[in-house]
Length: 173
Image (cartoon, rainbow, N blue to C red):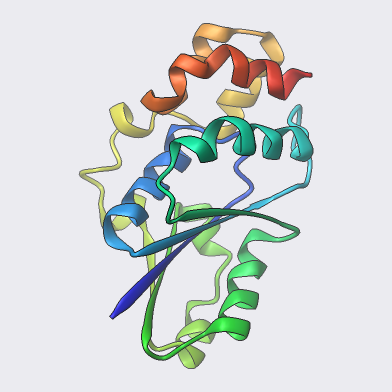
């Protein structure tokens, strides 16, 4: 059975924790769709964050990972399933406690029995360690606001650290 993974979240900015969700989905799915919003959050412009996705992050992800800018990341999961839902496809939703808490699992399972909602922090605690996901949106936004490149870099996934200055510059421009 074909498996599609969804990773919904504001991701302002994208950091090691978000990457961990995406990497977990990549390992378990045939296709991954990341829904991220264009809304501003704190010091992060939604437009600038999506620019960073397009120029820096997406080119470093596998080709079967699709990143879509949407109005509501969680609502877009519902919209996708209502428009494209298929009983011959297994669906998985990956998130942390906050994003998963916004989903109505009962509603989704009523219409999509092949749906599995995965709170990576709870279901895979061995993979959700401080070394892997030592980042929180608030911390990253604070490092951006302070202009602290070293702190900002420490919150990024390893593959993005060499591009930390360019990433920070994109978000600050």
